[in-house]
Length: 638
Image 1 (cartoon, rainbow, N blue to C red):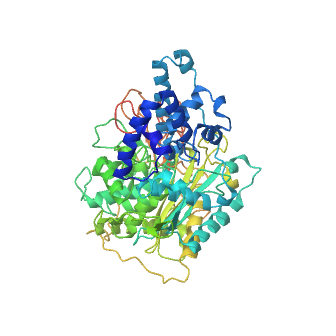
Image 2: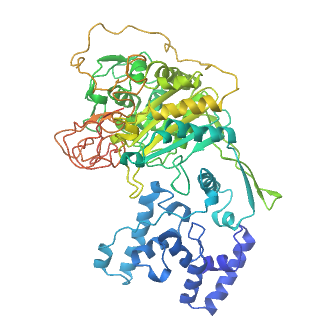
Image 3: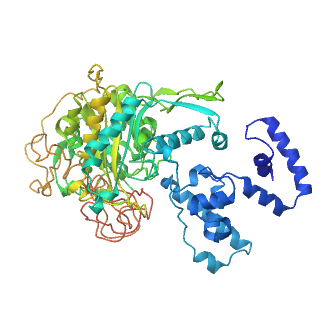
């Protein structure tokens, strides 16, 4: 009743006076109107998202039908929307689908309890996916994405509520810079979209997302979200449903330096610390179960330094390092750098090192900006100024700045990531013409390829993703652009390099000013012979450089094994490389799970030895953590 009073009789202002009026009008209305009439008024005035007020407008906006034609499944979804219209639109926010479905189930179960729906009817229902939104052509191109993202930003940060924004009268000035925005769009078009063939089915799956942040101010200066808001509604810069793969590995090393961590035999972890990079080497010192990550293309490296293991994105090394540091500490460091604490699939287990988390491109850009800013973190911002009715300026939240990790931890990580650009999987980033640091990554089953990088002046993250335009399911990108695989060192790095070069054109070239961890610049020789058990002669798959130094790969830096995505960065290739325990059971890594790559992809059964996305020995989502029955994904990807 009070909601109806607010909708129909009063405004949306958040004031004590309005609440008092609402209370007394509600009492009076309750005496004069039946509950059925009040419910009717409520449903006809409530906001359902998509600029739809009232149940009739909502039925048309989400399902293209009149309210009288709604079945219980669709009606229950619209009822669930009322709780959080901006969050539960599963087309706009696919990452929130599980929450929306949970609310939908709650509504239907309540109907069964009330006797309005039989149990058999309830059990036969499937979630009714709403249609793509219909938007004005005035929101075509990047404009519609920006409007949606900025709107969500204002609502989530409680600057302006959703209904007030929809009522209009606000002028919002963003932090986006037109020249950089245009440069981002052009880079994606030149390096990716122009190379797609509409007659090649896999090319219809290709999506791209990008975000660029000024490390010193936290301002988002450019974003790329999709080819056209009218054609592809979901903004790819903010979605949280694709694994980040090996772009997460730098957070493990940062955490090691920040926490003064040591190896199992007591050696300090520095860029020159030697680890055993043998393929399928079981991690030591973790009591959560058997976990033996596969390297990309099942390549064994034997004794290898952390610096070289980063260049080549060696899973065996980084899974062990996560245990040495403590996976809970690794997760905390990632949060300190800028990832949301509720990032999906960011579980504290050895697999966290291999990129099971499904952070957004913008989340990752914020975290990498913290590294670029010598460990000082400031919350990102998308908005410079908000005014109401041309005169009233709305107060914006003060930017919170703090030293998230020590300068030595951040700068030493930067020095290691410079090697990835100079000698590792991201040599194409040199085309930016500036000192650069970064890391490539690939999701399980090659459903996404990433490059996260920065110069002293700009932190930018690019992801190329695979999604079925009809079903919205994640799809592998094998064969896209006519290539065997799309790797992080390929199109994502090429886009990054062109954008960074153009975005910083005319600005002075600055080198990194680094303060390194003690011992970080001291290079120690490796043992002359390979460690016991090293399969040193096993070559990478054909056509996959497997992280060779620059100049030895047939195509410049196409990544570990096949580039960054060549082995799926979270599937059984480089990033998720753990092999499940072949004995089965409920211990982590032995359950039924997708490979370490893209969570939820590649489920089914298998023997745990998969090749970049091969199914594991059980069920699960590939991003599993260490609890019993939750799998540690396998992976030969990067």
